[in-house]
Length: 369
Image (cartoon, rainbow, N blue to C red; front, side, top):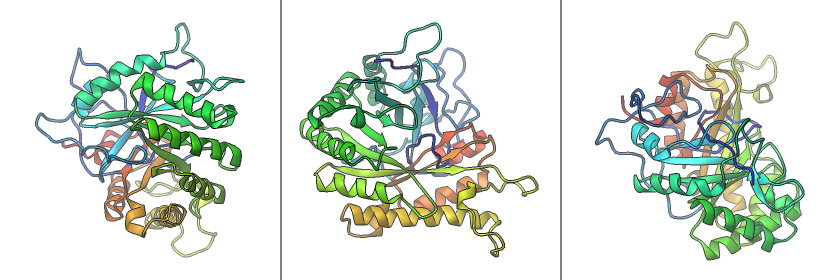
């Protein structure tokens, strides 16, 4: 195994890089706690943040499903390739954040063995999975939790590398028992691989029969919602008895073209309306296109998992914008995303990509000034 150092990422956007969905709510955070406190950087934020003593943190996670948390929560993504393992508990106390997703876990070349995606840090050994058990336990002690993100854009996933569902379940079990992860989130890029999807579903069901681990999927969001292969993946997983109650939608967001008035931010080109259509370039139109795609995906999830309707499906949807520019979201954008998440009862919000202005991330974190 080649686990690597960890760095917190959280940035609104749906992108092909990676993502975990979470709920965006208004709020603000305080400056870093100062010298001597462990430094943990949350992606998408300009600085470390703090929460005044006595301010309540986000509600506890739901008992079932993927990295499901109560409505209005934020899930911070920790990139295991960037920095040394952070003090998650200390970061949670400073910021008020309580949910962390650490990734990405892929397969060793040629084997059914988990490792971190990417190379080990220069001049040092990669952190072992077992080294996360202490930080995860410390986080639980302050009312938080952490889980693992499997798959992603780099390397081969375990579901494709392991030849049987039993072997795959053993690999998942080793990760959960070594780290004490509360959940596993599968960032699937091989949705068209039916054999891998079936192995994953059977392995997840076997794992959930043994351990109280929750499971979610992170899938790319397109202008038309989810790809047909991803809808079939959800349907197959449900049919084979695996419990998946959170589907995190990754949405890529790009900066505006030169001349576009700030703070408007352009959604990726593939989301644009046809040239010449009225209102296609306005800020609200861009946000509406993202919102429309989320609503389509919500209905697809409801159908794939035999849910009763939009309300139940909305509670199983998370949204993660992926940003490639430091000013990819304005404060106005963040408030609109937060309001949309509230209005539709989304499970949680998250951020990926380039660090954003602290004022923006404070809104999404919903931490007070």
